[in-house]
Amino acid sequence: MGTTTRSAVAPRRASTRQRHADLTVLGVEVALLALAVAVGAVLNARGVGLHADAAPLYATWRPHLGWGTPAAVLVAAAVIGVGVRWARAARWGPMLGVAYLASVAWTLSLALVDGWSAGFAERLTPQAEYLHEVPGVTDVRAMLAGFTGRILDFQPDSWSTHTAGHPPGALLVFVFLDRVGPGGGTTAALVCVLVGATVTVSVPVALRALGAAADARAVLPFLVLLPGAVWVGASADGLFTGVVAAGLALLAVRGRMAPAAGGLLLGCALYLSYGFVLVGLLALAVLVLRPTDRIGALLAGVSGVAVVVAAFTAAGFWWWDGYQRVVERYYQGWAADRPYGYWVWADLAALVCCAGPAVGPALRRATGRGLRRPGPALRRWSPLAAASAAGPAVLLPLAAALVVLAGDLSGLSKAEVERIWLPFAVWLLVATAHLPEPTRRWWLLGQAGTALAVNHLLWTVS
Image (cartoon, rainbow, N blue to C red):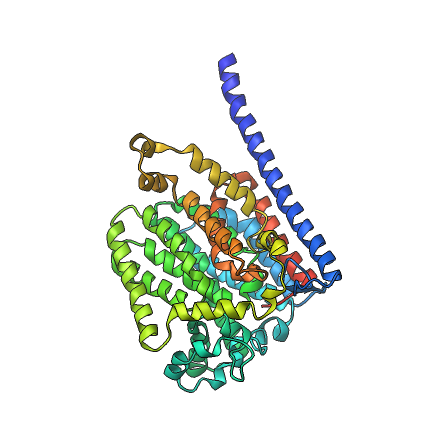
């Protein structure tokens, strides 16, 4: 009897310790954000060049309500109240379809808190944005050939800020939309939202293909109520997030055609943002986790990337030259003023606003699970086997965390990371599969509350 009692008490004690550890990490996140806000306010008051009125976020303080407020609350209530339970047992196809529509509704609702024009239709039309350059692109090949020469600032024909800061693929997306459709800010914003919301399909598809279907179902509500949806609707980084997630998902799917298509998308991603060279670490994690034909998938994926690189190079744009010019342009602007000593840690507070408060406790649990699961790999110690044995819900978020850390320490991501790191934040949230089922609704409430608080207290900038 005594042995039975002790065996029943031990798991409860372990669960209590885990809960306390989660709350400790949550407290650290709250303290980090509060400190970043307080220090940012002091530095702004002293005239230090943070160039972010509501540091650590690139925004201004402006409490407000909008037409999207009740809609956002209703979407959040539906996902938390019904979606969590429904995702556990729903048929796979309908589940992904409903999740995608819910994600679009969540993103649009948050955008409309700021109003139709300011929050959505005109979000991508300021002079610093891509749409400012679209009318001037009359010859795509000539634009690509001369793109690098216009990156540096203080020239008569310098590219606008966003265009100069990215490879030409980003501008090409909006040129294409202008050529084939009605064009304008509304079309561009809608495409960013519709593509960005596909992460609710791509990430679960990747997890299922890697043998973690149950984890995919657990993570899905967290992807729908992504706090970073504040910046998905509408910024080009939302579109970039969808492209990267789709590329990684295809890399995980069996066969050769899917990884080749994934390689094409990841190759395109390299020409959307220079920082996506770091996605290679996530791609490697996906390949390691594949249950079969890793080498074949690797070769197919690399071939897809090579096709895109060859096409852009043949058209006259060499990626490495563009990257070197962008680093120089970076320090011609606000980056020269923004203090590394503040942003190197305050960026992590901005990440909490983007990925949500659940990300810290989830990563803590994922790390612990990976350390506690030696499996057969340790008996024949093989790094590849050990990484594979860790499982997708451990290896993918930890790979994403390393990518974020590399970007943070580089000094090339000082501020505005709440949108820049969106493509990595969605993979960090894979770790939420480790959160205990009874607590998930509370964590989702925190996720939704974070997005609502940011969107209603601040006027965010894309």
